[in-house]
Image 1: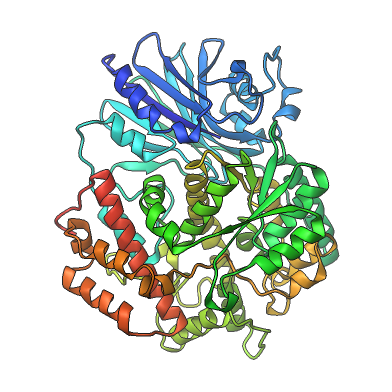
Image 2: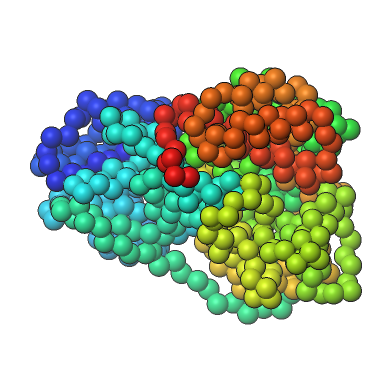
Length: 596
């Protein structure tokens, strides 16, 4: 995993010194080496910061040149060794970068359809002055870009774009802000900042010497499989284990996140089965009668697998000391308060490992969220499945909205804004249901989670890999009928069957947790002074979202009024989002359009 930065311009007056300074802001993504390529025309600059994982030799550094072409990219191609047999080259390294470079030279962008992995970057062919930007079909790695009339600048992170455009001012995108405030998320391709975009998953952008953009997509293969339920279980075990084995490709030892849930535990079990140097990390919070402490289940799995488990306590002091640093790395905060706990655990994991596996994708592919159960109950009237205490509040919230004939959203509305493009976030009447919920989680929700995971882990020079969010696993999961994933309304019923031979039986009796945080309690007590000081500040961005008088009312409510669980969570999310926006404005100097 690495950092990428590039500028392609119609003129040759690019400042290498300014570019180098902007690239240095990505050093946390790649502390091992920093390199810059300047084209013969001096109209293209490519930069790369390297976190070496495959072939740590200097020959594998980037930018990498080959046959009048050059590449910079961030990610891993897990099947690159197999792909080498299809290429005609005398390879000089054992790195996947060289495999990708040669493959693009020999086969063009069609080579991407053969790649299993996560990747985003740029490939330049000097003979025709064409630059190709690319992003993997699953959107695991990101590439941001800013396009002007006579140049384009792109990077793994937005902060280096801002720095390279020294003197330019940036504004908040009002439409995206509306989506963020309402759903704590926004559609793919957008960012919180005007004129700063991301490549869509699987998108290819060709940039010619006139800086005109030509769009294309990567064809990702799909298998059409037809099986009975027993076949789904057996093929699921084979497919998921195959993915985990691919994701273990590394010249350095590997770690796993272990929350005590089915997803991370299955990944850990299959990792231990196929590699000997695995250690595990779990985060926990004290207090609240153990509600936010998943250690009993993490320990259960770790003992069963004979895993060395590092337990990371997360406290309100961590929040006070790390919050601004977290927002600095997130740049465009989204996807809720879980980023905080992820950031603290990643900080500890990075002391021991460069690569770590996570369970992201299991819930989205195999129906693991309470909303799936709520939709199932709505479509199977009269059938009442077993409901855990942690699922109940969200299911009740769903049915209250349904009873009141409100629009049914896939996520609780935080700030209810009227100027929001709601299409991806809600179900139109009877059109949609569970399948549309799957589509939302896979096309919008999981990419947001992965963007956050990339930022919080790479903020500590740590590469996170997600074996569930893999092309072969995705293609397998999409062939499975919904009733097989939610048998009897049981969340992840199929994945539970798949995992049974690999995990202790006691684990399957545990309720889903999702690594919750106690911030709603801390905001009322230990962190109230912190929240009060931040929300009382003069801020044009905060004023546009919520006037100071309303913020005072929110603070008063926070201090004095107890709310039912779901509504208390929503209030905590409001506080979190306001804190994030205040920090973004202060650290990045962005402005809000006065017309918001």
